[in-house]
Amino acid sequence: DMTVTGITFDSGWAGTYNMGNYNLTRTSSIGSITIRGTFIHGSGTLTTTTTGSGLTMGGATDTFTGGSGTVDIQGTSNSAVNFTDGTVTLPNTFKTKGGFVLNANIDSFSNNSGEVEYYGTTTGFMSIGSSWSLNNYLHSGTGEMRRNSSVTIGGTFRQSAGTFTNGGNNLTTTITGLATISGGTFGSSTATGITDTFNGGLTISGGTYTPGSSGHTLD
Image 1 (cartoon, rainbow, N blue to C red):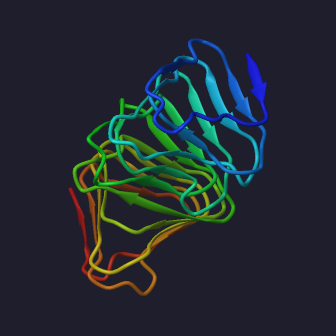
Image 2: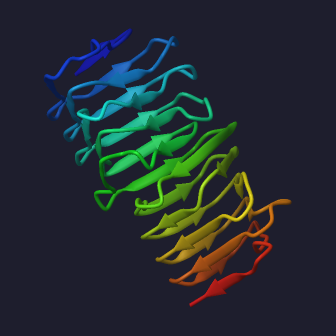
C-alpha cells in the first residue's frame, strides 16, 4: 500500500500506471489527480482524503480502467470527479463527496456493472453524456446531487438522505431497475419540462418524492 501527498502525471505522458491489488491514498488538499496515459485501478482502493482533491481526465488518448475495488473521492467541489475525454471504465464501487461528470466527448465508456455513490454534505453537479448510463446509483449523503443533464440509470436507484434534484429545465431521469426512496428528497424544485421514468417500479418508505413538472411514468 502507498500513501502520498500528491500524484502528478506529466502532460503528454503515455505510460501505464497499474495499482494491482494495492491501496493508493492521496493526502494533498491542493489540486486533483489528473489521469494521463493509462491508469489501471485493480482490486485495491484509490482514495483522495481532503475536500480540495478530486479526480480528472481530459486527454483523448488517456484511459481510466476501474477494477473490482473502490475509488473514493472525498473532494467536495461540484465537479470533483470530471471525465471530459478519453476512455473510461468505472470500478465496482465509485464513491464521491462532490460532483460527478461524464462528458459527452468521452470516446468510450463502460459502467462495468458497478455502483456510483454520492455521500457528500454539500452540492455536487451530475452531468452524464447522452450516450452513457450509470448502472446502480446510491444517494446516502445529506447534501444535494444536482442533475445538470438528462440521466439514465440502467440498474437500481437507492436514496436514504439528502436531495437528488434537477439543475435545469427539460431534463429526463430514467431508472431501469427498482427505485427506492427511504429518506431525503427526490424532486425537481422549480424546473420545468421535467420527466421521471421508473421502468422497474418505485418504492417510497420515507422521504419525499416530487414528480417532475411534465409528469412521471411507472412501469
